[in-house]
Length: 468
Image (tube, rainbow, N blue to C red):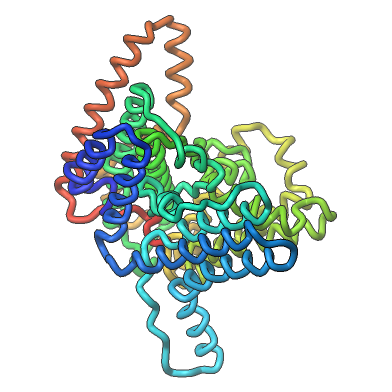
């Protein structure tokens, strides 16, 4: 089940909301939300529930053990909880990759068939780890009620593709929360915005990508290669930020206040600035639970570089067991290392517009690595992006560019902070809040209607980050 599917929009969500607000009791609300979350996750493959339940139960037991232990025993409970979750993630996501890599090294003819990856396993694994580690650090108390811990792990708004919600961010709201009329209205508006991003922009970009000759990435022209990279850059932003908007909006409806996950990343002044704006919750996780424990930037330049490369190697692997993801992580690790070695001083001397354009081009190149399943395909696409390596414009790309005209440029404009600009304009014009709120409500209704119309004609529209 996906947020942008008609089953979710027309049946699951209205029924869940109706039942949730049927009674004011927090116990009732938590029960409805937990039951609906388990149904939501089990909709495609009920067996996947077993993995999530195992990981949550193991860490529930270990956290309680930690709560009543001291010294080395506490560390043993921590290691057991972390190992249980990471072992589950490793078996499903990485075991076949590492086994097949070793088999390839010894020139064996057999290969291990990868296991089917449970949806959202990377996200809920990291969320569970924040709970266990924070209990060990003394930042949070162990949750004595397994049902409430399971609600944190399985809560459907952010279960499948984030944002990664740390236990400490919602611990109090699990025990006590309320939804005001303003919360409900703003949550619905945010959900509608995310739905529009997915249905009206990301899905159209996906259709454009389908019409470009990318299967072998061998017949791409120079302009076609850059055009495809640009379209995918738009698609992945509107797809993932759209999901995050819907998750944050749904959370608001049910009384949870999730942190922002995107902050207009395509206006970034540097790659470092880009990663402060893109998938903010993932960056925060690696910073707090990996980079800082390794020593961060407190132990000299050499150690800072090593820690940066470790974090980015893990970031690449987190996205998938593939050499393209590993290279994608290494690519950003290398750029940030150059930044530490003096690149930052150079970019600070350049005009902002130059830094923004250069950063955007570097990000586009990174998304080419991210898009392809094999290094060969990615390298052929990157080669085509170099001048004089092939024709300037192929017939297929020319036809696609003509068909969609300036639409991608409009989409790019929508990735800019237009909301902030329009808010500032409204203040200058001294528009009445009632007028602005009414206008926004009308726009959201139109956005929802158009989104449903677009979705109805699609047989499938999964989110890109569902694969992680």
